Image (tube, rainbow over the protein chains, first blue to last red):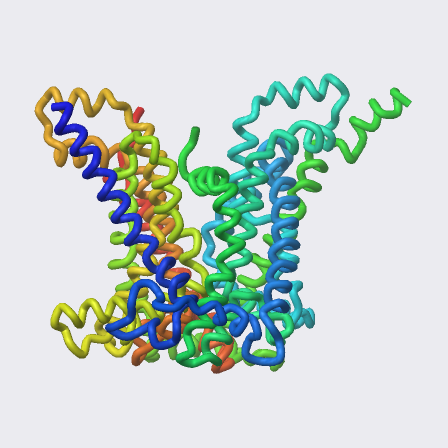
Length: 279
Length: 300
């Protein structure tokens, strides 16, 4: 019996590891391909590991295809992602506090509006929103990518609301007796306790904005403003069948996301389930 | 000073209604300016002939009448529905399978979950889409494997029948969020149910269908709705991997709206398509919610 259990245990781990390897095979393939000679990436004789490790794909890719290098694109992505993330955290925390803790007229209505917005697919609004930004003369700038993030992001508002609801109301009441008003309750009580939820928001919103493709595709027309996601698509088209540098830049573009995951994966995974399951 | 402060607390700025609207202001502004007004505009333009920077010309229901005769739009609806009907259940089954696989309490559980989450972490990126295009391309490893099994001349992206498969797989591969949501649901199922069932002689399959599935049903509903919405609106992967081809086989609705609006400058017509799409999605979601009371089970 003991032995049977031990064998089953080994079988289980072998299966989970093998299946896991299959799941991350595309990622491994991308990274290994970025170190390969052009002739070893594709075709039925392509080896799994590179026969010679080619590091030149990275500097070659970094040069980009036009006059701009990937330094520009990474800088743009960092600007958009950092400013966007900052806005998401501030505005979503404020709105979450209002909807979870302040008893104002119309709260139910705005809560429903928030849920509806969360369920509304963004693609439905892509044309009219574009028309509005265009009329404001802001197409071709970072503004349409950054400004909306300062106006609350329903997914994170909802997530933070769930978190705030879990904090005991007695805290607010005690603070009220000690002379706090609704503003200082937010800044002194709720905001400090919201820590874990804020980290989750930072991690998820940063990587969503970093990965976003449709926004930059619609709003950025000048290559000097391209984000990494938009730039590697153009780079891949320009390189044709020269896949090594393309895989190198693709691998680089995922590094920030992997770093966040490495350090904060618990927060990230908490965030994913926060909306769905109570308690 | 103290008295001033106390009177301040009852002043205008400290009333609950005022505080609420001040804190909720960002969302209210975005709801009005980035959701409500755009939707109204979109509804208006859907009855117009409209090009960017031109004056919209009211044409009544002409756009909607044209939609009925537009075979590209019809086909695009059809392939989108095919994508959703095959892709969403596949993803959910996969997510549930992995979630159950990883419920076994071992020291490695956290690590395994993290590894299985990696595809969802990066799956929506342009980098992965570019990799996918080569991975399933005519000279990529997947096609090489299929060819070595005897199907010489096989090619995903050259075939209108098979081109959607890599896209569906790319979507199903990102099962991580659904998996985590299922996993947290599974954790809440009381062990006593399984023990009682085991004593009664129920096998693993029986236990799965009469305990696990019913208790998970509200979570299945949640995942189903979320995945349906994102499935209907799939864009990045299709745009980069196939660009809608070959011969419109993967010309999903969001991609079609994008092309119609921005490449062909038929913005009024594209708005009409968005509305039709939204109504179809709302109807499907509504039907699922209405019928869900028959198949979801809530523990009391």
